[in-house]
Image 1 (cartoon, rainbow, N blue to C red):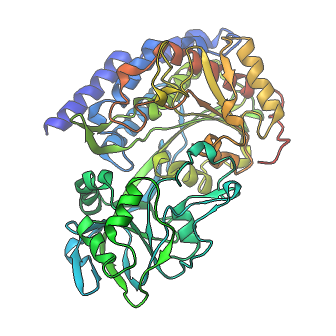
Image 2: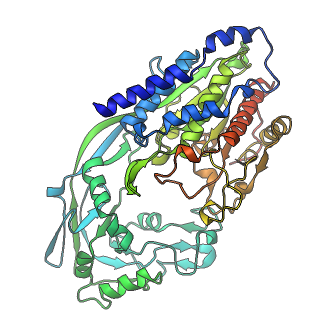
Image 3: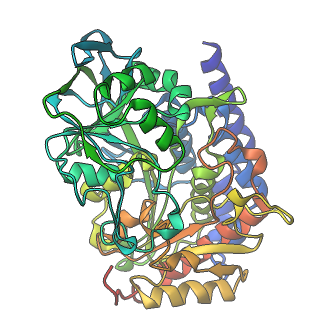
Length: 538
């Protein structure tokens, strides 16, 4: 009750204290012509700070998908949209597009493993990802398990893994870094799990390491209490069980083999694993993982500002962000709430501020679609669901402007390598603006040059970018449907996916400039006579 009271109090204070009387202002503004860049100048650093202080507060509990905190964030967003007079575009006249989920949890008493006459219990001897399993197969050691064609790396050159259980060392081959992954995944390189899944393994056993052992209790808690949530409309396919054994269980796997567990463990810890080899094929490792399932739900939040032109209003400029994060996780310095202020609280409140600014009127000729996706952190659930079940015809969306992590900048003198990709104040990564539409890239630059003149950085448009950022946020779902996109981003940092991604580290002044630039770009796109022409294949 205490936590609920705090949440309600926080919600009421935000609603009462930070939302202006937009309707009165709109009446005054309707008679006036909009500024050259729409109402972008109405977006302020203080406004963004107020909204983010709520969205990324501890009371939201990290906004996991699904969770109570995410639901409260969704209701907060919808309340603002209603106050500003935006039309609901979710299900049944609401702002919410409901998504059916299934939560699976491990039944510990009916989950066990067996090898060489010894039995092992879940939670004491091993933990596993949450996949139902009932299998037995011989073991094969695959070392690092990577395939990197440009480096002539192939862990499976001399080994057969189909219908076996692979013992895998985590990490890249010795001497290689992520920068050595020069091509697109699937064309030049495959990560081990994808390689093993494609080659037909029955399960994967990961060589123990100190990090996994330190994380043991969290993994057990996830499997038995939190569970694995999946969209019922898009089940994981095919499922592969990943097993993390204790060192004691791992010792048993290599008894009587040509290499001891101690040698395998030592070489793995040194980053120089043994070459792949088959273990005694007459010894079968068996595992049974039993699950209990329960239904769950989550939601996208969707609204429309209807355009003023009787014909052009049937086309939409989409402005999107994901409003979820990681929820609760492993405590760091005693903090277990992953607030996600930058990822993607910054995008969440930027879209909210843009919606508030444009709702003041006058309206653009085309309609504006505002969408807050859930489950981006769960492999783009929300955007994938919307693309498969659109509440607005996809062929009427002329562009998606997606905002993800625009809240941080690199401070002068910062030598932390984890912050190397952070932009400096006044700079912005603009990703994909020219990948599908030359015209869209030109419009984006023209708006910027006529307004705030941010330093546009196209570093991540390089097809050899090892991070492949163009494929890592919700906009890629729209791009795959033929909709041109722009992805706005300020870079990764030391607090990425950590509890320390918190509101006091946000550069609100720079965020104001970025949000204003995106608002101005949306206004221009919503008023141009023609939609941007797609002249390049994805």
